[in-house]
View 1 (cartoon, helix red, strand yellow):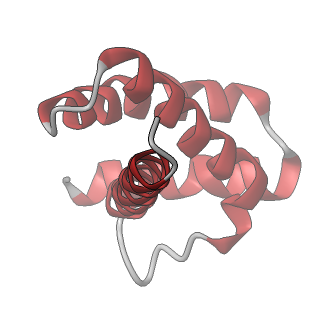
View 2 (cartoon, helix red, strand yellow):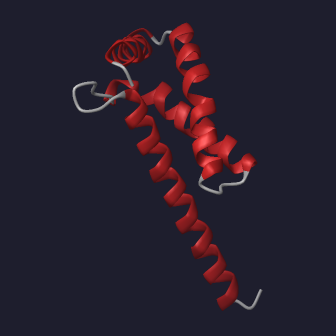
Length: 106
């Protein structure tokens, strides 16, 4: 990500954090949601699950934008890390459900 883009996305995120700016959020959503979905489906996540997880990640951005620190990472890195962690959590939950179902004989 180029420096100009990084600064632009950081300013939009600040607007979401401080002013609850819906236009800024819409711009961030339009830019990052398709990229997150593409990455998740590339990780062999079914499309419907990827779409749901993208919604979850973008909701986190809306509610926790103030936690983003542009000095530590780009917004892209921050969002993709959230997506990665949520994907891993979902995989762990699914494995746990499968183990539980096998134990109960279902």
